[in-house]
Image 1 (cartoon, helix red, strand yellow):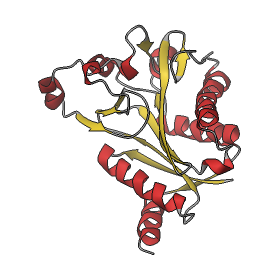
Image 2 (cartoon, rainbow, N blue to C red):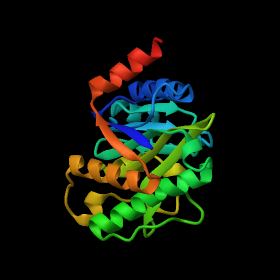
Image 3 (cartoon, helix red, strand yellow):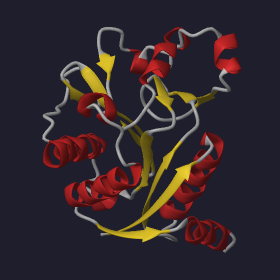
Image 4 (tube, rainbow, N blue to C red):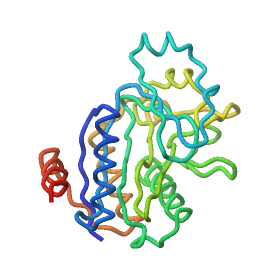
Length: 231
């Protein structure tokens, strides 16, 4: 399967959400191939379908003072933090080509990071029987939350690379209070090259999901969105 991949850099959450919604519709109509957006967000909180606002523990004034926006969205799960130094991936895939199983798809997303962390960095990561995501010990390094509409996916994963982990003190991540969070930077003791890690994500994603990636730039993505959407 062909997979377009756009590496966008820091992108406002509302802009990325609008892109996803348009790509979802176009993919449902088979007007575009599978596409994955890789980007970073300014500090942002998103609430999934199992939201509990008590899991946002920072006072509203603190969040406003930091310029943090809160979005209620249609992915699964509870509250997730996004911010600079975190690779966020939004695969827009037709699951008819990937086993037509949401559970299998989530398992594959987890496997991407289990393999990446071991093969690229010698880090043994794994799953938790109770909680979705990828963990190093009792600390989550990749959060996963998806939505599937007419068998096309949106939302996806958040991989902590150089993430400011103190920002997680604003929330109970995914509603979890008995475990921690970590990042590649914290685990390895040095900041990582984001461009390099982006390409590692593409490599392992493509291998696990058995697809052929083709990089496209922001201009090409806008042409896809604009040209196709106006048909």
